[in-house]
Image 1 (cartoon, rainbow, N blue to C red):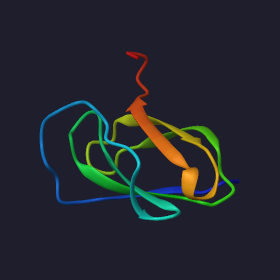
Image 2 (cartoon, helix red, strand yellow):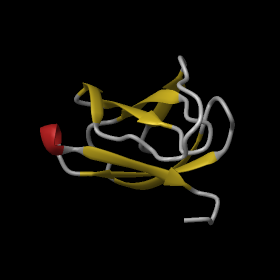
Image 3 (cartoon, one colour):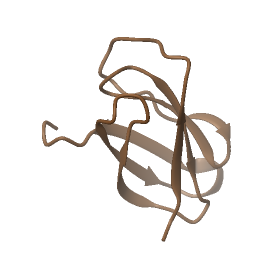
Length: 85
């Protein structure tokens, strides 16, 4: 099973839009929860692509993660996964 892991901390508060493509390493991205605004690191294994549901570690609401591209051109898009999109 592919691995997608999150680690949240140091929130910015407010807002519902997700930031994406802020890289920590080639396999880690910093995203903002579209519900609580908390900044979270997302680790995605190098061979993973597609759409996944992951819960925020802070507010427990579901995210829809879309991972696309390869190598240095990989990107991740985060949106609400509660049916409101």
